Amino acid sequence: MTSIKLPNLEAFITRRNSLIQHIRTTSGSGVVVLNTAKEVFRSRDSDYPYRHDSDFYYMTGFCEPQSYLVLQVTPTSSTSIIFCRPKDLEREIWDGLRLGPELATQYLGVDQAFSVEELNAMMPDLLKNQTHIYSRLAISSDMDALLREWLNSLRAKARLGIKVPQHFHDIEPLIHEMRLTKDAIEISLMRKAGKIAANGHIRAMQTSRPGLREYHLEAELLYEFRRNGAQSVAYNSIVATGQNACILHYKASDAELKNGDLCLIDAGCELDSYASDITRTFPVNGKFTTPQKEVYEIVLAAQQEAIRHSILGNEFQKPHEKALEILVAGLFDLKILNQATHGTVANAIENKSYQPYYMHRTSHWLGIDVHDVGSYREPMSSDDSSRILREGMILTVEPGLYFRPSPEVPEKYWNIGIRIEDDVLVSSKGNEILSSDAPVAINDIEGLMSSSGN
Image 1 (cartoon, rainbow, N blue to C red):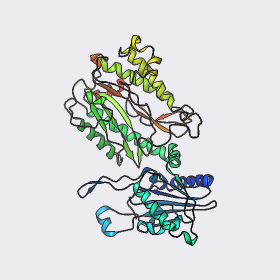
Image 2 (image 1 turned 180 degrees about the vertical axis):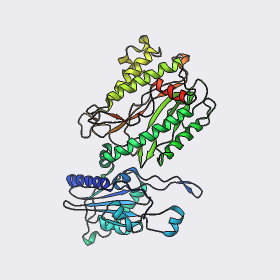
Image 3 (image 1 turned 135 degrees about the vertical axis):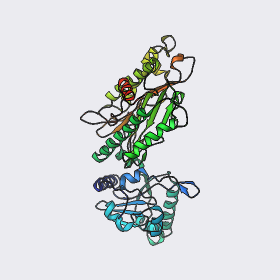
Image 4 (image 1 turned 60 degrees about the vertical axis):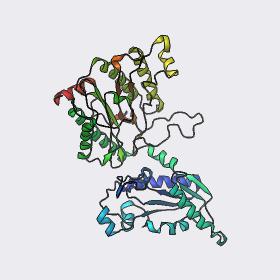
């Protein structure tokens, strides 16, 4: 028996079968070789917490290191093989239980399983007389070295009539295209991850008060994530108060939460390998000042308009364009941009006059990775057009405005950094905000914080 939690078996079998069918359609036959992530050394006798490779997990549901998936595909049949760590009582006493090849076929739904110690001996035979290899290309030097070793072993037997694969295909675009559209199981997990992360943001707002430190709020987030079953953060949490909110990838530090300042929190959890990604900005003392409200209302309006356009059939680019129109119009309203220098809103967008105050995109894909995979362009499109939003795609919507001290910015807005981010599922029933439990309206935030004693 294993302590590893293995999700719905049929989903992973279905994904492998879809990949197998694609290979049949494009190449007729071939061999897929996909490895998982390596363990990473942290310091003396210590590794970083292990995190499996996302593509490998998507195809197998398996979280152990030192693992390989091999798919042998012919026009009429296929064989799925897992190479994994063998059972080892001594290592399991120290590091935890291993699944082992004896149980891998049952738990992972593959046809065959072997110890990873047999990989190098078996792979040349699995590759011989094949024409096509599907693997990651120029990504892992370790994997490249293994492929060279296996192929050189075959080349040494060429006089025996053994054929060596001649065509190499990058497996990543194929799997990434599959990952872009989420199935019902993935969507259910991401709903749960969104709710857990939203509760973390609520807890941070309820805890906030002048005199605390950024790391205090980070601790509240972590507690709420783990308390509700999330295994990890999805990324390093950003807890940024005052001027720190104008640093996009700031990490929570020891800065003091001060009366009258805002706090920006960008934090999400990882639940069963799936990410949430939420940003909220709120007043440390529970009450927005007038300048803070003015900026916040612009960002919120931009986000709401972008969400309205994150719908089935729209281009991925459309929410960004709609958010940008409102943000730039807001910069004119705040007297940060002016008609004499920057012309109209359209001129300012064309000339990118907004970029000192809004320097990132409005959206990215979300899934197993927080910045999930999948092209933002339509595949095979002749004009390189933006991706059309389709059923089951999940994206973030996160406009923002950031005002560092500058002669162009009225002093009352200095050091105000505001971003609002939600996770949006595209559906034929209308889009669904997976992170909607975290309050976003000014009155709701102030009401929540007031009720908790701020």
